[in-house]
Image 1 (cartoon, rainbow, N blue to C red):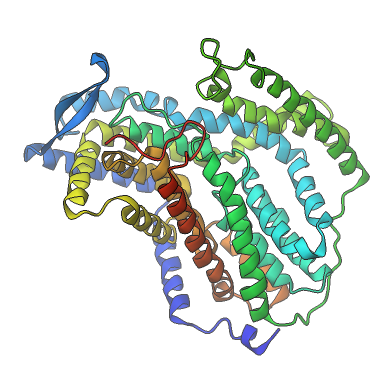
Image 2 (cartoon, rainbow, N blue to C red; image 1 turned 60 degrees about the horizontal axis):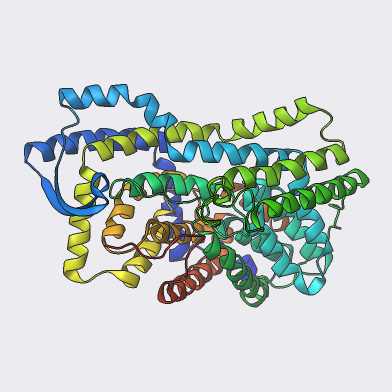
Length: 520
């Protein structure tokens, strides 16, 4: 390793700052506890605001009167009052069971868990990575990292170490391979060509936040698909350039022992991939038969439309089967699935893997309900929107500022669902009043949330990545990883903001039937 590479651990002000971020982030309580604290804070603030007679008057949609625009006044509700206590106690269970994100995430996890647990996703990643031409190794590693986030932690465990081995196999620095894979998996967390588990989760939280202003508004799980589809190629291109032009030249020549690529597929895995390919092809053809013809079964039976149709309404179930069917076929072909009990066991393990998310959602659902019932969310969004309008801080400048604030907040609270559950009830209705759709607010959040994952010491897999670095550089530590990944983080942020500006100016829908703007 070059002399410059060996001095990466020098405590620059950036590293010292991130060390402080790590200490502050580690000192925070668990996300579930944070929601408990926030819920108590909402109750206390609601009592204070109610005693002071705090209220706002605004224009709202009257769904009972043909969606007419009417003037409405809301007052802060004291959550310690008798009526409030009775309401809150009797809705605890329904708050959780009715939380929009719960069912959608649960459904898609059923399919993803089988595809992942059977070995299909791991085999696909290794097959694609080891088959890539030498000239496309960097782009392929970054791209596969982005795609791997469908299966949550699979990319961190499989692709990040594989990236190092692939780079060594072609005479390149293994840490550059680690960095490229980590950048794709974590920095490209929100981009993908397919719908993953994050999409329905965010959409559910955005829907409930939007309902504070518009009770009929529904944010679709595919609401950001067009933007994230294009983002996949933008992040891949940026990640490739950063690796080849900035990161690897800085690392110098690798002097350590060279490993061979030992991640080739077994005969059983190759057989499983053939089975999975056939099953996926048959399934896709069947879906197309129900959608492509003008009188297709899953089109709108009255209008023949696709956007407002059973196909779009059932997209989560359709995506779940897209993972489940090939996953089972792969398992049968590779011998990892022998009977129906194995399939159910994989589903059970997958659901067990999101048990932490289920606990988080329970407390987040209570916070959201308390916040909505107190009218503090409405009051804050109206007052905030009026203030921003009065100072002229709206549109693109506000949106870009929101992205940057989210990116900085992500350094402290790396759990994306926890942050959005807190931020959505405030910013979604506020930005709706400023003419920005919930889908646009959500995509801005996802950009900021992704870009700084790779330099956030509080991110769960950051420590694992440090361990991977240490395999090839014994002196590597948090500072090494941060200084190596910082160019990715800054360039991803810049590239994504440029893409967001272009999208905003052109007004292209963010996803099927998902507008950029909301009629304020």
